[in-house]
Image 1 (cartoon, rainbow, N blue to C red):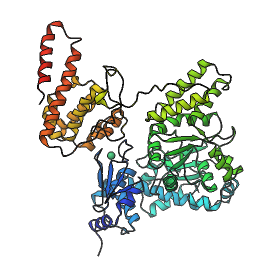
Image 2: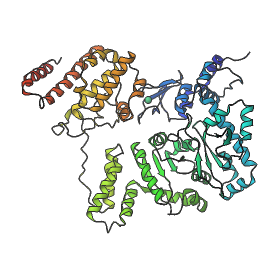
Image 3: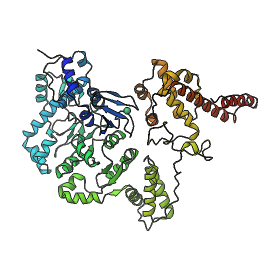
Length: 591
Ligand SMILES: [Zn+2]
């Protein structure tokens, strides 16, 4: 009897180990009968996502993302349902019968044909390399052995697209899918291979599917050194790291990752025995790359070319990595070398020594500062040292940890031969006793310690006078049904913290439109600039209604009264009496 989609789905759902599937993308820690991990669907460094193996589901308490293993793969890999089902089934060792009808699920899955197109092209490219002695010889000259070429499935794109077109026809994949995948191009009614005559490096996603290609020009040919697949629903170069599928385990094990700039750099390192390296594909390192990588790595080596361009690329990569709070090291190559050329001349031991002597961040910043001024520590003037410290603070400010920033700066002072500075960072204070210095426009006191308001370890800075505003927002997001009508009566002008004002505004708009407040939908609507603030906020649960009502009245009164007190400064004198009366009312209304 033929299986139906329902049968297969049931078998996959029962057979799939959600801990294994999710764990492939996000490190998970056991917590009782469940597992905890950092949610990949919102900006966070805290384990707010839990995975329940008994029920086969995951759920993030910060952003609301949740579902089964198939849903997780769908969201993470950004593929359609059918493709996600295939991936999960393969992991669970469940065969999907040939010719299974996916019904309307298939129509919605535009990625499936593109996935197949990439796979067909990969097969053809790998086979063509075998049939091309000149190319095989060239790879050998470059120092790559057969095992390496096989491991990375390096291939060769033939001059004519015929083989691909024949395969496509046999497998009933439309030519349009190859065009969409950026494998074939069309010009004047003729179809051609965009990569014709190039060495092909397939780019895989974390589950090992090919999603794009990088094509390198062989020697003696004209054209750009590399061309890459265009962006597609499957492939966004700002998210994907080349080689991550091979390196993930080693990175997870060691907690360390090496970032290089080129496919050949990565392949050479792998062959030499360095298995925790990834490469960016024709783009600068982005926040998304850094986020993906630092889910597994706590220490990152930026291993770039030894020339000025390489050093500049290191500099550009610092911000996204620092934002993730990861430790950074910079192994420095001789001026004329890149990791690939270096590996061809040196042993793994030499490389390890180079890594052991890698510059740390203060070192890198200091050498950069001296180089651009053409000076040494001895010849730098006090003003130049000052300027260098300022430049360094500009870079270091992206690290969320005050302690690490201070440590790096003190370190730098020491290396510049300066005395340690009296620490300028305010000691952490809880907001309750923020003291007299925190008037309007005053200091930004971190509020991570306000119990229950922000997630543990949150680094958001909030003025103490705005804490009640954040509490109002928290109440609205936690208990929209109970808080909505009161919230709609509030004036957005009361809020002194723009972030609260905007988030409040977005939440009320969503409530007005949908009649309910789904946190997941809310998160999707909130602009990037507010995501961190939103993710830091603890969403409360299960408070008794009378406590919520009391807290709500309390916060609303405090927020309005702060606003009124401030408005006294600009209000016309004849209004003062009225405003003062209202303030008094608000102050005595306390339960
Ligand atoms: Zn989340």
